Amino acid sequence: MKKWNIILAVSITLLFLGGCTAQGPAPETAEADLAQLKALPGMSDEETADMFGGGEENWTEDKQFFIGRIFHVNLYGGEYNMYTTCSEDGIVEAVSVWIVSGERAVTDEETETWVGRVTELMGTEPVFDGESSEAGSQNWKWNADGFAAAIYRMEDTLSLYFQPAVGELK
Image (cartoon, helix red, strand yellow):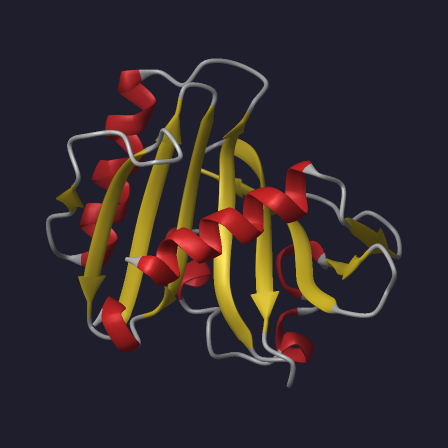
C-alpha cells in the first residue's frame, strides 16, 4: 500500500509541479493496447525508446535524474499521455497513463469502463477501497501473475498504473 502511495505522490509531484522537462521532438500518437503497456515494466529504457511512435526523455529540471519517458498513445480511440518511470540502471519500473488530467470532471461511466478493461486484462476482480484515500482518491487495485495494476480517481483526475508486484504488492 505504501509503495502505491509513494508512486502516486511522486508521479503527481513530477507531473504537476513542473519538475520534469522533455528532450527531443514530440512523438506522434501511436496505437497501443493495455497488454503492451503492462509488458513495459522490466524492459530496458533503450528497448522502449522507439515504441508507440517514440518517447520523449523525461528528466528532472536540473537534468541530474532521468525519470523515464513520455509517450502519446491511442487507447480505445482516445489519446493519452503515458509515462514510464525507470530505475537508476535504466529499467522500466512502472507505467502510468493519465486518462483525465485535470481538464474536466471524471464520469462514473468512464471509470467503470476503465475498471472493466483492466479487470479483463488482469483476469481478476479489483480490490476497491470504497472510501477516499488521504489524497482524496478512490482506488481500484489488481494483483495477478506477478503484476500489480491500479486506477486512481479524483474529481478531475483518472490515472492507471502498472508495475511488477514486489514486496508488499504481492
